Length: 233
Image (cartoon, rainbow, N blue to C red):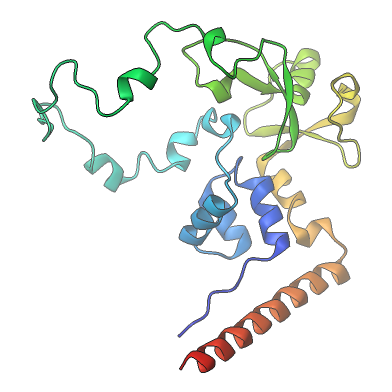
């Protein structure tokens, strides 16, 4: 039986930095993992795609919604749902009616409402976010924007397509007043991903040490599993 290689801390960090911004197949290619394993690891790490990913012009191709099998599985014009007519008017299961949002409910009536201008640190992307709108037509996560991106756009206009705003090395901060244009730069998605790979983040000797540690960890885990199997047999 072939053993799956355990995930290393460096691979998890690469996932945290890149999975929210890039398609899973590209992350899988960089890590040398299967697409399925990347999706499973993202679920384990509680990672999800960022609003910036979903707003990209190619997002509809990246997320698989235009895949032939996805298109074939959609409802076609004139197709009748199998549950048509089964729901009784005014019927609600359990406490559904009591707990569901009411039509036209204002955002400020929500229990966890915070006003426009509120800032918070986004734990997945590890950047400072600011609430910019209460627009009910937007998904709650899309009502917040990265402060560093807003600072760049205020000085330079819209971020060029295919590029991303990042902090220059060693200049990242979570203090709003300290996020200024001189701390920022714009790079391509590919360049950002290259920088976040341990092959380029660390010196060659250290990168080789990281890979050696990963191989050693896999060997130890494999041996421990074999010993457990022997004890249970």
